Image (cartoon, rainbow, N blue to C red):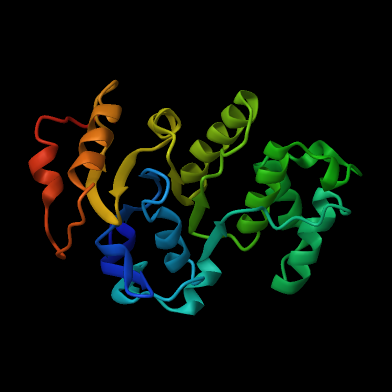
Length: 253
């Protein structure tokens, strides 16, 4: 079995002749949390939207679970991209029931997912009265209904208070134990440092680093080095610029 659940080969995306994602070759190991870091506008969301079928790549390929990605693979990929798809006039259980009927998922699975995201005790409380952190967890619950092997989260801690961030971090760290690989994007270095096992750093649409988490205290230095290196556009599939700028970094995990 391939050790990577997800790979991309020279994946690219352009809009009106403007290159946004530039020949990215990503490798996400199974049963881990993979943190995708980059400044705002670096191309993270565009990359994730290609992986989840929202956008069509301009070039390159996506491999999922050892084979060429197709739309059938979306049955094994859960995603929370941008705003949680929540009906605010429904309870957490009712929100999940709407999706469960479409997917053919049992009420038992609804109960399991509510437990998994720590929303089992919300009862008749409407989602409109939830905190932002609770809405994020409900969005993740919806993404988990179909028992995905890969969970894709785009900037999930945006707007959360410190308690909400901590709760979400703890939940994400539990998912690999359930056989769920998590690919989470963020521009918040400290959060990814506390959550991820592996990281990729994107700047100006280029994957400038991919590998283990550097030793404590060195992630910011690595991030800034990659961001500075790719402030000027670079292209070229297989170009290993990361190797030249990350010498001396040791994996901390």
